Length: 279
Length: 279
Image (tube, rainbow over all chains, first blue to last red; front, side):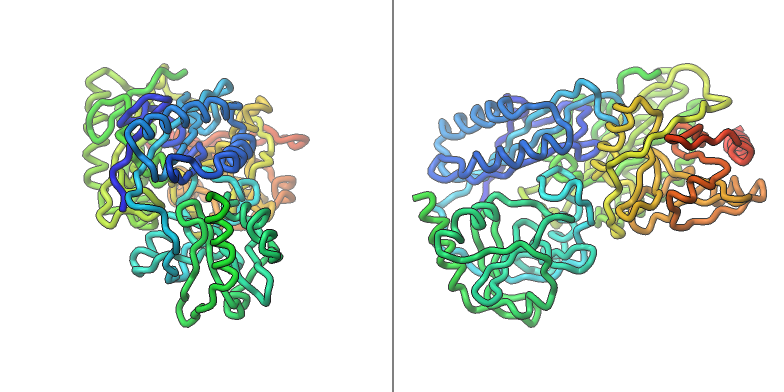
């Protein structure tokens, strides 16, 4: 359940964005979506590390301290309102400027924070997701792969397909038909006793929970994770399938078309790590 | 020379955009840039045809009559202010909605019109452009190729390179190294006595002036235009190089690195067609 958003623009509670703004014009921006639990933003350091990498790739001014300050202003106001759980999106755009694609030489940034309250307690378990395959695929664009920029039409179109199909999520493929992700999350397959996740050299977003799983949760339970090119046949031979994102942490996949996955053995062990990580 | 913009949001003169807006969040929008000359928007029908195609590809509501009405409101106000020449950008976003990639089932649109006055008369000739090659390439994404959507980071990055190099424009390649476009215009090479322009199946924007050149101006002077895959070697053997966009109509290219093009024979004949087209 979600309630309407609260929005801040450059540190002030606001209901509109000053124009012109290159975020609107060209998607010339970056964002992060953070989960707030018990009044705490989860894994803020990892979100800021990914954002920092995106700022570098897009050639934005160094503005992370300002982003962090704007975020904390918003967070303080939420806590003062008594919020405990919610999702917070931080969007950084390259601000205004003259007409045209070229960024102004002295670009400024605009920082938009929006928050949506989540009612009820956090989930002890996550219901398995039914997937469809999206016809909309990721484009192949190594230069922008991994970062969370604001050019997200591919996922928008795939999410529209998911919605029309009444599914929980949609599997998105790359231009070569390889497995990449779901519309809002990174994908993991259990092949034998190893976990495999698509490499993100060509496309996709490098999720914070994906990184945690690879660097912390899987090592803690003695499971090897490999990044590789994964094909449809890998999905057919997978013993477990799940995905990761900020909202759910980790969510098991129950099926996709004719395929069904009942086992959640590794998923459950990892989900305990995820929950324990924050206890 | 340009002056600051005038902006309308949903038909009202405005300096800000209501939030949330999916255009800001995901680049979930489309745009057109029209040249206004002698108080007339040029080739409005072709701009609306491309926009209509984009609305279909992105699954937007049918809103062209509303877009046209908003545009005319803005145009009338500009003419009342005494404007004669300018560039008008019409942006259509998928409006607001709940958090997440999936468009709301009953999406509305938001229509932003911005205008920048151009002072002085229209150009009788256009100065040749010096090019650099952008390291930033087009991604490969056939589903979105041709339309003018708001996910334009690739061109933003290439335009930043152009600017740093002090060049007039930057040649952009595709993922396979093929020639595609400049950052804001379609590319034409004269090979022998034919014109060749990159096919746009994988990436790129199908410009209105590109279409006019192929369907009207080149036939009028008896020149054949072919769409094909063009490589660097084609550039080396080209006798003339130029590009097309709304701002300049057609603009000759003087050089790129070691390459120089002095001939403008076909370019000039086409530019006369372009100017005559509007006389």
